[in-house]
Structure formats: C-alpha cells, structure tokens
Image (cartoon, rainbow, N blue to C red; front, top):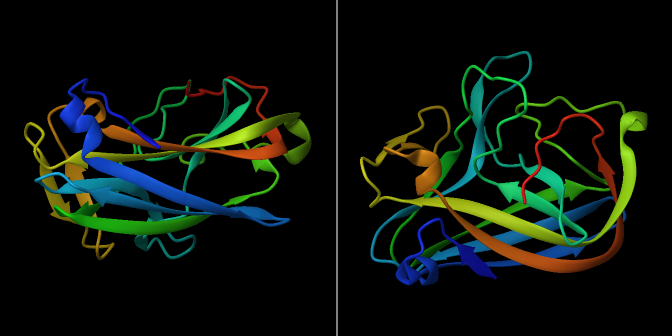
Amino acid sequence: MENIANDPDPQKRSNVSLSAKLDRTENEIAVEYTVKNDSRGDIYVLDAQPAVKPGTKESFGATDVFYLCKGGNDAAIVLRGILPLPAHPVTRRVIPLGTKVGPNEQVTHKFSIPLPLRERNDRYVPPLEIDKYVKETVSSLVLRVQFIRGSVEEFKAEPADYAPGFFRVNSKKLVQDTETLSSEWQIGSTELLTRPDLFIRLK
C-alpha cells in the first residue's frame, strides 16, 4: 500500500493509510478497505457519489459507484474518488460525497466489481452493448481511494441533507487538494472488456 499524495511533503504521505482485501467469486470481486487517519486533523474519504433513484427523483449517496480502466503493466485500475472527466465536454463535474474520519479514527467500506471486468465511467459515459467491447486480459488489480484533508486552503464541509452521514466538500483547489491511496493485488489472468471509443484512462 502507498499514499500517492499530490504534495511531495513526506509527512503528508505517511499519516493516512489504506488496508484492503478482496474476495473473488465466479461473478464478482468483493473489495473491503479501511482508511486509517493518523494525522492531527479531520480527513474526508471521497468514495460516495451523488445519485438519484430512477423513477422517484429521490437523491441519495451511492456507495457502489467506481471507475475502472486498463492501466499499464497489465493491470486494471479501480478508482473510488473524483471520476476522470470524459473526452466530451460536460456542464458540471460530479464531486463525490465525503465520509468524515477524525484523528486516530478509521472507516471501512465495501463494494463489488462484477466479472468480467469492464471499463466504466458511468457518471459520464454510458455503457456499450456487450459485443462492442474488446476482450483483453489483466493479471493485477489496483485499487485507488481518494481523500481530502480538512486543513487545505478554503476547505468547506456541509452535511448532505439527502445522504445522512456524508458531507458535501469543497476547497480552493479541490482536485489538486485530493490525495490518493493505493493497493494492488495479483488476480491471475482475468478478462477485461475495454472500450474501443475515445475513453479517458488513468495512468
């Protein structure tokens, strides 16, 4: 595990950590991860997405949303955080909701990745028909979980009235202020359906 912080300060890199485990079945990869805050201030784990229930227009915090792409070194990259913007213009960027984690506290979350793996950025790019994907294989899975510190410049956190337990967060430079934790597993040769269109991939 490592903290891939945007700030080169080594103190920033060492005091928030990620531990994770996965359980693979025939139909999915279940992931359980814990973010531990050993810093002196609050952090907010950005792994829930604002969503609306179909047919009811009722807002809620979706905890099962993730981005997935093929990365270098024969890996699938799974992101829980600020989803990459698509190639086409969007009117507004979707900012995740944050879970507050105080000093010397930790939070554990779970989600599942269906098999076969599929490149996805579902908040911005609709899925293709299954026969439109290109079949490839990967041998490792990289989980990235993002968070932001309450100490960054002009930070604001307001409880999300439609999603109890979650916060709407903002700062002067939100994307740049976000830090990324990472964990990697070897999963054996695993099918990954990649998109042949102009799909933005992380490195």
